[in-house]
Amino acid sequence: MTRLTDHIQMPMAKMIWIFALLILLTTFPLFAADDSSPDLRAGAATTIITPPLGSWQQGAGVTVRGEEIRDDLEANALYLTDGETPLLFLSCDLVGLEISAVQPIREAISEETGVPPRQVLIACTHTHSGPSLVKTNYYMPIDEEYIATLGPKLVKVSKAAIDSATPAKIGWGMGETRIGYNRRVCWADGTHTMHGDVGSPDFAGLEGPDDPTHLAIFAVDLNGEPIAVVHHNTSHPTTFYGAGLFSSDYPGVARAILRDELGDIPVLYFNGAQGDIAMNNLLDPKHEERVERMQRIGGMLAEETLRLYRDAEFHSKVTLGHDHEDLPIETRQPDAKELEKAKATMERVENGEKIAGMNLILAYGAVELEKRYGDRPIDPLPVHVFRIGDIALVTQPCELYCQFGIDIKRRSPTPFTAVIGLADGYQGYCPTIAGVLGGGYSGQPISWTRLEPYAGYRIVESAGRMMNGLWRGEE
Image 1 (tube, helix red, strand yellow):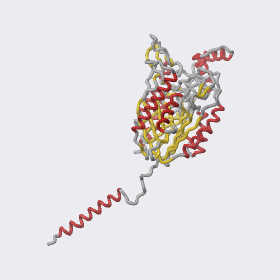
Image 2 (cartoon, rainbow, N blue to C red):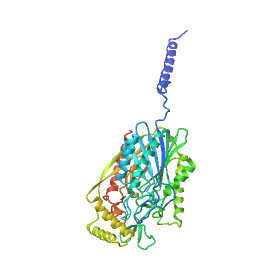
Image 3 (spheres, rainbow, N blue to C red):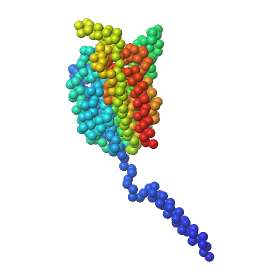
Image 4 (cartoon, rainbow, N blue to C red):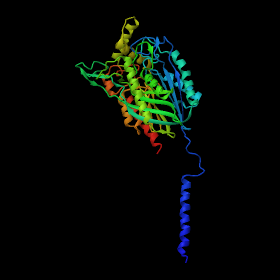
């Protein structure tokens, strides 16, 4: 005998099966577009930017020309796009570029490539073995001819990077390797200096911290073959300061090692908040030749970058983003007494008296400050935040004191945060209040330490707002 419930259960079972099938088809449509194709594209390129032999070499306290090329200076470019947001990064083996030099180059790159000009980042590694590009020496001019030839080279390498763009994946990692140490020395009388004999009974400690964090970013094609490497750490590349030769310093050593391991690919090095950071540890000095030290530090950089590469997870879909703010920063001037003293010193120099070292540097810097910025109470300072997946790259144009870099990272919504200096221009040292009060080189007002005492704190707050804005915009 057939029961009524038998007629009901059979259709109900079919209905449940059909309902489950509908859910499955909705979740995994049979004829949906292939969502496995990556949105991300990456391209990279390299060019040589070594100046001609005989060119002036950068240096505040030395007046020399580069008569030898130890290793070539390079500009390395990385292009990323998700189809909506294009980002172009350039790392140049140079001490720095004034904003007046960066702006026309950035505009020319944008015109040639279509990347919005403020999404083109030109940063310098701060090697002191490059051409004279920042006016810190009374006797030595800025190499305007070199700057004129640099622009077309950066346009060309940018276009090459974009033209080579291919579907790609990005990986990253954060590690640690200590290549820099605080170099600001405090004395018993309350004054501070750049370097000094820490064995002196008047030594009262170091002024600030250092930062050994190391960020690395890797672009690879869909077969896993490397396209480019970006890595970031914090120190002053001053191995051949005043030596009369051109060199990319420890970033070049690291680059060569990475190329030996990963192939002949572009390698971008970005320097951190290194205003008060140097390669030598004042509290535990190593007895090593300067080339030995350069090779050791370059090896440390490369080793940590390769370790992070081996552990990296790669993503074909990442969020790209960008924001920037031009901070209206006030400039400061030396007090009347110091300026009068500086002018008297420079008058003696112009009359042929041989004055060298820090006395000349500070006197020239004070006079130049009044000359160049006496009628410019505001010095706009560009701060950028670039987002690449979980990575936040904060850029600013100063030799920022290390404490500010640490503070920016503390305000970041992501642990993968790097603070890049000497980017989008060069606006000199940016000390903490402790540095301003302590004075000395990079603390007291000169042409390349000209920003108001609160400049660094304003950079920190601006970066914090923009970083959190980019991340919250995703919610």
